[in-house]
Length: 117
Image 1 (cartoon, helix red, strand yellow):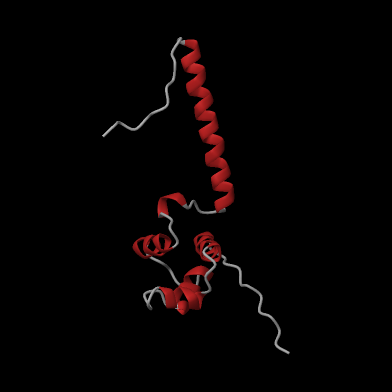
Image 2 (cartoon, rainbow, N blue to C red; image 1 turned 30 degrees about the vertical axis):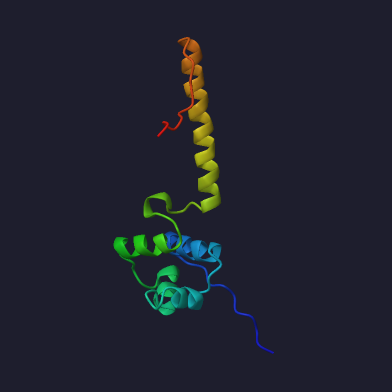
């Protein structure tokens, strides 16, 4: 009976983020290689995730795009769920500030609407 392999943990925050995004896309390394028509080799992406190999900004951006993300929105050391929660908190705070400003100055805030074509 084969012993199940443990998922290795990355020692580098970017590698951990890359792995988490791949897991979030429900892709194994092999599936990533197959669905990218060989553009992303399983052994190479695995080495990026473990921190065994350095990834250039350009390649990281391309890989993140494959997962539907942008490099600028994946802060190191913060998992995606925490980042989303933080952005929601900031949006709520921003809305409170705008509403408070409007109330103090007697303004009425109207949501944007699309112009009629």
